[in-house]
Image (tube, rainbow, N blue to C red; front, top):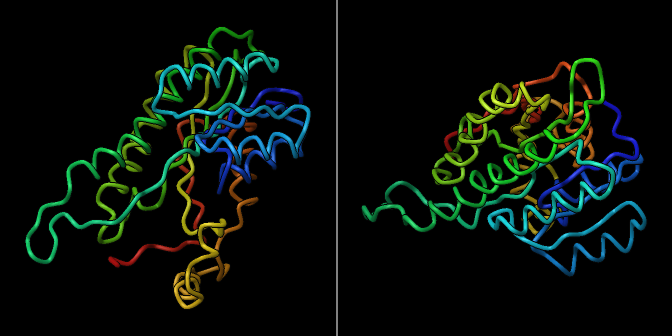
Length: 257
């Protein structure tokens, strides 16, 4: 599927992997909708990248906001691609603390909402809009969606119960959504990144960064945001990629802690 001059929606597009993906697709000639809660940063990216990049402020957990972002992409020539990067973790917590205190329920719920429910909300509204478009090829393809999980959803570390559960949910949705949407001509894949060097890592101590880098078999470094964006592009444009969860981690396997 050719995404040149086609609309790509990137949730969480004002920072981290989302921002890198926005810049990557804009440079490739796609029209890009940046959907994020950070109004100041989102407007700055829209202003910097210029024509073909539109910022929509809002939350993936708000139905009206999410539909507005999808509508903005429709106005840019039809929504053909989605990269659902919105997510994150507020803090780490064990199932019970060392003194036996149970995991905070609200923290768990908030983390699952932001990562899993937010991705689900994006998936349902985006695929609905795609289903109304004319197919782009003889296979009946109308669009493609990439959801963003994490290797924490496969082998999460101690303290990642909420985040790992949320990302595991995204992994679990992938093949089901691909099957659900087959009749609509919409493909669904996911990326499970390992440690990718976004701005969030720049404030971490050098020793901590080196510890993580040393655990990566090869190449012995953090992943680059552009490597993530390139994989997202491949999953969106390779017409036979469907229902797949792709690890992007340099073959690292997380230790318990």
